[in-house]
Length: 326
Image (tube, rainbow, N blue to C red; front, side, top):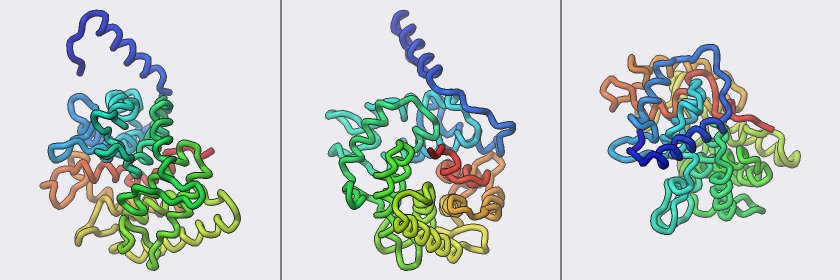
């Protein structure tokens, strides 16, 4: 894992790693890990060094962040994810970059990738990583993009998906008032059919499920009128998902059954208070012997991208079940 160093440098490296490991609270271990083969499959996607997930010849940082969340839900302790924690969540250089090169949260011109920044803040809280300095840097950049009065965000690339992740990240960072503004703006983006989308034109199960989680994190926060807006938006989003599921147990995308769409939609319904057993059962039926989820392109083997979003609803949870509300 580590290159050879002189004695002093090696000692310093070991000390730093040990200090970070000790600083991370030990997660309470569940009595039994559900679908351990799936957890093992996803952990294996991080490669020999355990630092990140590479797909199709390049590093997929969003997939890496969500995989870390999924592994935490599967009982994979933070200390067992330490290489990825150090590389992804604890390095400001990797996350934000510098004048010489952008990080995985920034574009080539140094501007912030809004949705991914929200995901970063959320993942940091789910894993309970002591990376307050990096979190503060990410939050500061995100805050500058948000209109404090209207909740409108500049630099958004993926519509309501970015807004949803931004609000989830802000809430996880205990910036509830600003997150509430973002959620209220997100609600204005709801389509006539009740769904949300990555564009102003089309609704999708994925975007709607994520938006529903963002709306549902705090059902009563703000004025009574704001609470009523959230409740109405939630009901319309639930109705959209109920109307678009296939055979009452999954959702399609691009003309075929989709693990990712089903995962996000099911988590949205769970966050809104609905039972998702039928969707969890369908997800279970899509598992390969290797532990990952099957897709039409995975040649009978597990697919990393699908598994990076599918494990949490497989065990009957949403992302909101993984974070402490206070």
